[in-house]
Image 1 (cartoon, helix red, strand yellow):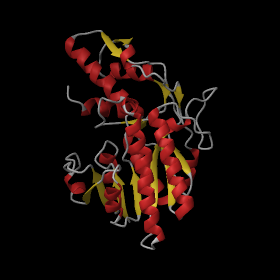
Image 2 (cartoon, rainbow, N blue to C red; image 1 turned 180 degrees about the horizontal axis):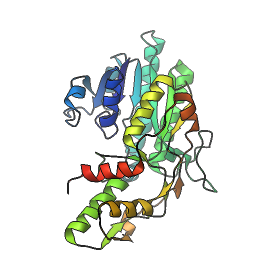
Image 3 (cartoon, one colour; image 1 turned 135 degrees about the vertical axis):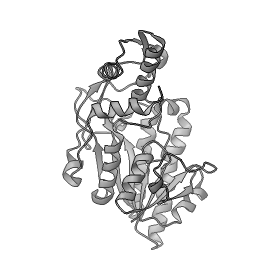
Image 4 (cartoon, rainbow, N blue to C red; image 1 turned 180 degrees about the vertical axis):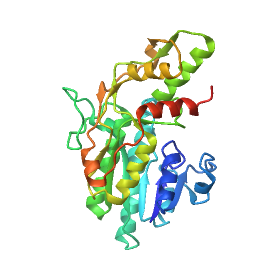
Length: 317
């Protein structure tokens, strides 16, 4: 299958592209115009991926990518950082919701012209669910109630995709990914940020480590398991359905911080810094992935301890 992966040069892309190549798909990866192809891929994978420029804010750029007539599109490209989305909510909406609207319109026109029948796997986020009282694992049938610019822009992306599906017959599958981490993630995100600060404390002999709020509970997956879930959904996801990509296990950020400190053999005292806290944070975000398991047979393979060890080892000391 010819698969177009938007945002392929990002964190998830580095693990998803090898999965697609291993599954014998023809892979087209997108990067921002003017950017060189990423150098993080193994040589064998690099030879099998053809790179295209894509700016989701420009309709001509979107149409040019779609003119490649992909049989499937995995739509990763987004403003994926909650902090970045809060700094410029309009940009988050333009890229995440508006960019998806442009993409699905172009794919729908491709289908209506009889040039193909592409499948769109839209990568959304579990943050679309918002806050649930009392806390419990989220189901795909739960109402969407975002409480951040990032999450609301992803709801917009889902709405745009399903509108295009109803209007043009475009096949759409939605993946609502719960938090994921792993080697190669930048320290703009919480797990590698903890590891980076703990390493700095060990190097400097400091005992106090600044953190954000450590009370939230999160359902963390390894990025490699998430990539495998996307490949499984590409093959077996049902048209018009949304799927939670989750482990079903909740961990407090405090427990993750303390486990990283153990792995790094650092005696550290976390100290909440108001500048590192989010103004509207979800206290509990855990998912039920029974639907994904039943439809695709997917299940997480990598233990959370292994994920943390790999994050630690991937960072420079």
